[in-house]
Amino acid sequence: MDRFIRAGTIAAVLGGLLLAVGAFLQLLPPHYEHFSDEVVTGAFAVSSALRFTGAILMTWGLVAIYARQADRAGRLGLVAVVACLANMALQGGWMFADLFVAPTFAKDASQILDGDSPGRLAAAAMVAWFANSTFVLLGIATMRARVLPKVCGIALIVAGACTVVPLPVDGPAFEVVIGIAFTVAGVRASTVRGSAQLAAETPALSHPTA
Image (cartoon, rainbow, N blue to C red; front, side, top):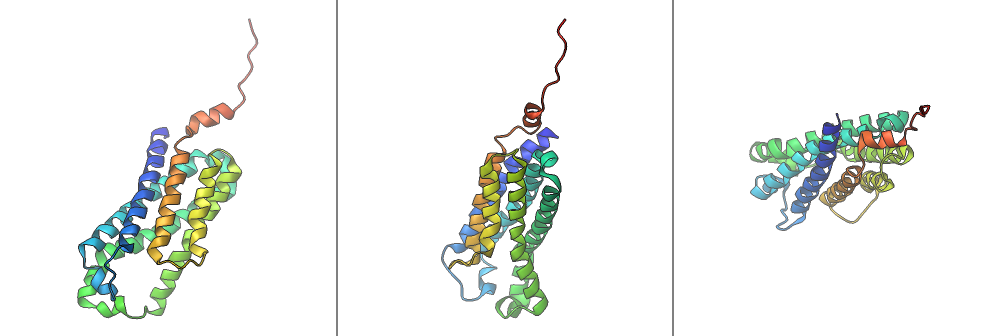
């Protein structure tokens, strides 16, 4: 289990970096007037692949970050990690669609990508976007558990809170912030040895001397 957790914190770091890099690529020119023109480019394919891979690694990282503090995080920690995993399922599905579904739509049904989203699709996008705020719960649970460094909890809070703050930037810029913040959380979590930390905090039993 310790090996899984250690590898998971590394996955958190790599996943956050891949998400940030992939989202940053979408901010670079050229900027297309129609989304259907962008999704068929090689740059968009690379960006989507990085983001999708990053989301998979971040999901593993979430489990590892929670596992390091599961005994101390309490009910809030359990609720938080379940909510975060549900969020990553939404984000992963969205990024999967960007990578594999959108290019097909661009050729056969470009109006779906370029026009106004149908009500159900627009609602799904809104839910997926605000679901990122679940990181705030895990950040609070992390700070309350006092097992991982405080910076880890703060970084998770930043990753979740940035999505509900109105900023004058495009959507990919928020993913850059989320990726960097998650990377910081993974780096700080990796500095704590899970079972060793708990053992160090457990009072040693006294034995009578001979």
